[in-house]
Image 1 (cartoon, rainbow, N blue to C red):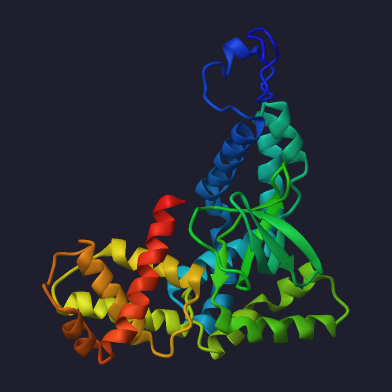
Image 2: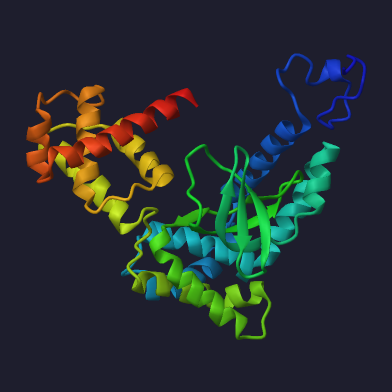
Length: 327
């Protein structure tokens, strides 16, 4: 047990009674993680500085020209900004870390900052998930990496992801940049990209610096537009949204539930309308939108599916929702 006059376990150097006494479930990891997040957010709040905007604009144009027809301007700028910081103008990041080391007092945080060289690209496939970390297979470096989870949203196995990472000072790495997940129907693009990498004599970071734009072009050619769901999953969600709009209803709660259901359960339906019909029945019977007083047969008729197909996925959604509530 920690005495009130003992050094605080958060690493501040103060006595426990003068620092974190009274905070519930205090751990060094929690305090450290919060400060790391604050430091990372301050980087994106402060940079690029005005003097660097010209360089960034020129760099961003190199991304917008080949990608503007496939992706939103906001998405391209977010990706290009990370590439600018961590592949083009690494001096900006290095200068930021030096400034943070001068300002930081907590020894445990200083130790982590000293390990923060330029962030590294993680292009990988999710192979396992737990409460705190994703186990990701780094496809360019043939190793498993523990990537800290950013939210409680379900993440299916076998999806690919992209981000820049830094050591988290605990068990793995954390995403510095935008963390992007790609639906499983884009896997062939990554297979091809990795095969091309194995045929050149370059380290992974050099290869990504030279070919990142190419990867995004190949994804666009394969139909990717920046969405996190497969074409089938988008079909389900789109049909639900269209039905609600046509009937002057709205239900973010239903759409969020079905998003999670699709990701975690991966229902093997032949037609997206069957899942959508089951979802509408569930939403109506559980008051997730203002009732329409439609019978099961009426809902099935709207979606042109049989009542038995509707009920199969209604039951599946119901069971999933119960498990989610009790988790």
